[in-house]
Image (cartoon, rainbow, N blue to C red; front, side, top):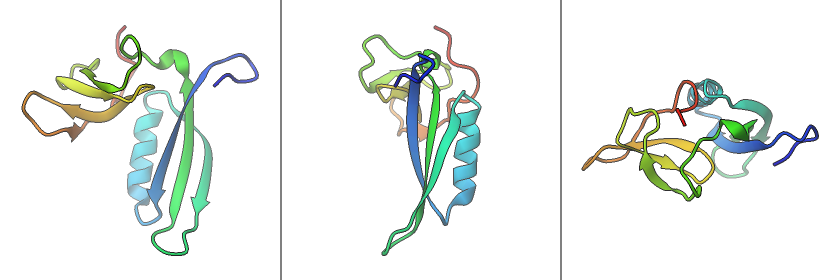
Length: 115
C-alpha cells in the first residue's frame, strides 16, 4: 500500500485472545525488533467465545527481502538459523523447519536478512 508521502508499506494483522496478553506483548516486541510498528489496535467483542484484540502493524516494503517472484512457500532461511523458513508471499514468518523435522517457531529477530 502506498502512503500519502509515496512510501510503500507492508501491512500485517494479528489477532490475540484477551486471555493471552503475555503472548501478544511478546509477539509485538518480536515484530517491533524487525521493523514493524503498531498502527492500530481494536477490541473484538464476541457474544460467544473469547474476546479478542486485533493489532494492525506496518513496515516499509523495502525492508522485505523475499525470494524472487514472491510466491508463498518454504525457502532457505535468510537468517541461517534453520534450513527453511516459510515465506508468506509478503513477509518471512516465524515457521521454520530442518530436513526431516516438524515445523517449529523461530521468530525472525534482528535486522532484515542479507540480500
